[in-house]
Amino acid sequence: MPFSNNAPLNVSGVGDFNAAVDGVCRIARGPAVPGENWLVQRVTVSTNSSAETTARIYRNFVGSEQFIDGTYSGNQDVSDEMDILLRTGETLVIEWTGGATPIGTPAGTLPRATVRLEGERQMSNRSM
Image (cartoon, rainbow, N blue to C red):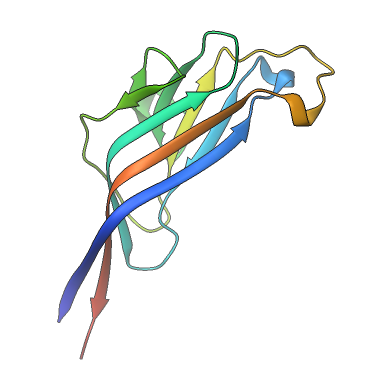
């Protein structure tokens, strides 16, 4: 008989803006454990880029059909009017644009982006 164990979801990710692709940064997060689902209810984004950035949220890959939501600012902004259910193997891809850096900037000094996903972690189990 299936049953669920629920726990708070609080997952973070960090990535560098890539000077070679016009200041784009992408971070993907999702449940990887078989039988685990995430109900994402809040996405918080931030950067340390001095440029004006925006952030867009997609399901599984970047594409217009996969677009879920976005923020006007990719820095210190929140998208929290959502209930996105991700099943094992699915991801949310957060893409920041506008974080351009001069070509030749050392990797350790590239602007960084951070995302935090909050909601509920659901683990389905089967007992005999």
